[in-house]
Length: 133
Length: 119
Image 1 (cartoon, rainbow over the protein chains, first blue to last red):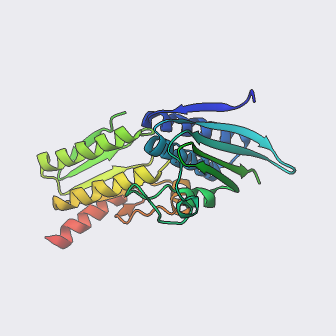
Image 2 (cartoon, chains in turn blue, yellow):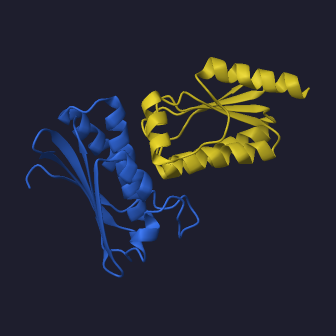
Image 3 (cartoon, each protein chain N blue to C red):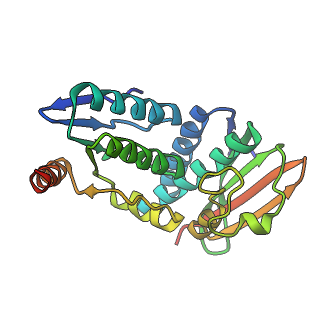
């Protein structure tokens, strides 16, 4: 899609770029300060997972039109090792890296829609949407 | 972007002025610990008013800074967490069990109080 914003994620500097792009897109779409911050935080966590686990990938952001409202969709995609157990990764407090976990349960809480696809050895795609209400 | 650290008497004040990368945060951790040792500081204030996002890495790094400085016998106060940042942190399930204060003034008052109660 022509209006997609794509940010390649290869280092921790790209995390900052991705969340700044997301912040600007959310603000342009009409989200208030709280939601703009939520969206920027979600992008930060998703981009961080790419850097930590897959080394590189991309974040795609776009404005989407629903039945009643506009929203912002964020897609995080990588071709990394994949997640062994998505079910475990979606439990609060689960981590394989000794950190705070993938942050995915939190990301799901912050957004209105959340889907994840992951295949071992092939990579992970997380797709989240926040609707403007 | 490097975070400036000001020395004010027995205290150090680090004011974050823009979005920080992970490397910037780790640099801040290193610099603060070095200065605390160099100046024998009793307290540190980290002003995060300008920080627009506090994700898991930033939260963990600020917590690490506080714990490391505590091992030197000094206190740390995080000041200026914006309301929407606080909202996002709690929603995301991030916990930062360290001393926080509304702004620089309240942060300094907190350090003074700690110094009085321990002397």
